Image (cartoon, rainbow, N blue to C red; front, top):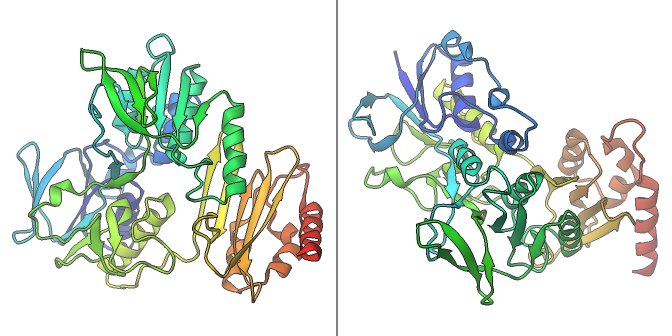
Length: 433
C-alpha cells in the first residue's frame, strides 16, 4: 500500500490528508511537532482573550483521525533523505515514505536585531507562541508594558490581545499609516486613527534598532532607530513570517525563500510536494506573490495536491485574490486588486468613500481607460464573496458595480445601508473630474 507522509498538520496538510482519504485507500501519516491534533490557527487570539478554550479550536473530534485511518505522529522532522525516501525524526526514529507532502508552514521573521533572542521576545504564529505569551504576559502585573514591532495583521491582533488584559502597548510601524504598504493611504489613515482610539500608542515611521537585556537574560527595553528608549517587559515581533524550511538543507530539494514548486505543487524531487505557507511558486500566478501565507490558499493547495496524488492531476489555480481581517472593531474585506498608494499601477484609478463616523469606508479600483472593475476594499461593510468574484470574472465596469452594489451587501437585517451615499459620492466625483 502506498504510504503518503504529510509533514505539518495545519490547514494545508490536513486538507490534503482529508481529500486523499476521500479519494483513495492509501496509508496516510500526518506528522507535527506543534500539536497532537489540528487546530484553527486563525482563532488563537480568542483563547488568550478568553472567548474560546483550547479544545474549542479543534474542528474535528479526536476520534476523527482513527475513524478515517489517518495516523498521527507528534514529532519533529530533522532531515529528509529523498534518495532512500526516509524521514529522520528528532527522537531517532526513521520513517519510510512513498509520497511526501511538505506543509511545514512558517515562523516569525527576525532581522538580526541585537538581543533578539532574549526571554520576552516572541512572535505569534504557533501554539507554542501562544503558550509562551501566556507565560510572558499573563496580566499587567507581570507585564505592565509591551512593545510590538511591525504593523501587519498579526501585529494588530497581538495589540488587541494584550489590550484586553490592560497591558500598555506601544506599536511601532515604519510607514506613515498603518499597513500602508498594502492599503491606500486614506484607508491606512482610518485604521491608524481607529487603533489610536483604543489607547494603543501607535508610532508611525518608527523602527526597532536594538533590544536591551536587563542583565538576567530578560527584556528590559527597546531602542528605536530615532534613539528613544522604551521600557517594556515583552517585545512582540510581527514583522512578517518566513517559510519553515531549515531542515531541508542538503536534502537536494530546491528552495529559495520557500520550497520551489510548479503549478502541480511538485518539487524538483519525484514524489515530493510542497504546499501552504512554505511553498513558493517558481512563476508567480498573475499578480499574486510567489509565497502566500494565507489560510484559504493553504486549503486550496491541499485539495489540489490530493487530486494529483490520487491520479487526477490539475494545476493549482487560486482564482481572484481575496482576504479578510479585523482591526479591533472594524472588519475588513478585499476582493480583486486594490493596490496601496505607492504601489498603484499606472492604469489603476481609485474611488474612495468614507462615512463621517470614521469606521466605514470602501475603495474601488478600476481601469482608468476601460473603467473595468479591478477590485474593492471594504471596512465596516460586509460584502458577498460570490457576487464580487462573479463581477471580477465577468469584467464588469465600475459603473455596473456601483449601480448593483446592494446585491453584494452581506450585512444583517436592520443594519444601515450606504449604497445610495456611495453612488452619490461617485457621481459627484465624476462631475468634478
